[in-house]
Length: 229
Ligand code: DC
Image 1 (tube, rainbow, N blue to C red):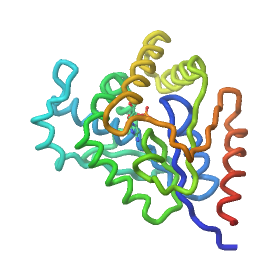
Image 2 (tube, rainbow, N blue to C red):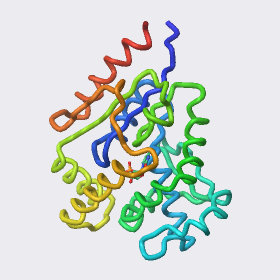
Image 3 (cartoon, helix red, strand yellow):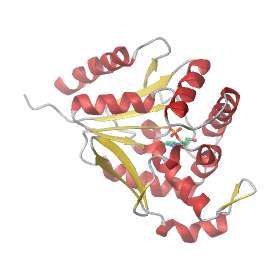
């Protein structure tokens, strides 16, 4: 049977397991997986490299001239998604604390969002895509066939992010992780440009007590209904 290749939009706060779910789903469905947060992180790294963050603020007058020079793309290598910034693989560097500390400031800036949203929409024109982020169901793919809003208990998110950092050999205390997540939640959900919202047609998935497999099965059951109808 020829199944329809749909668009799946996954939104939620940091460290809710969105990317894990998106990656697992894309693998099972043989869809493209795009971690849109990685694109904002790459943009933040570009700003650091080009000294466009001064005293914790974005040098807006300067950044506009840089926007056309910032090239971000993905490549799949050994079944893993890698992100490139101006030709360099920055997949590991974008996870470092120096990026996490300022990414919300960069992601709140409209011209950066416009550039990245345009690129994201191009990647999704053919369907068969799972994208995770903050504005995927609201702005990037408002017509997505399946929209998910993923949540998890705040302390569970802290533990997950800490484990992720440790597995990457990045040193951060539990208090630093807790504070960084709280700050980013606040900026991401209160910013003027495309704040994180739960759109009315999104299904809410609280995965605090679910295993990776259980949440995947839950979503696959929803997908099955959509692609066979
Ligand atoms: O998902 P993440 O933690 O890697 O996201 C990094 C930052 O980028 C986070 O502060 C929110 C922002 N972001 C966004 O504004 N819009 C998206 N679609 C994805 C991420």
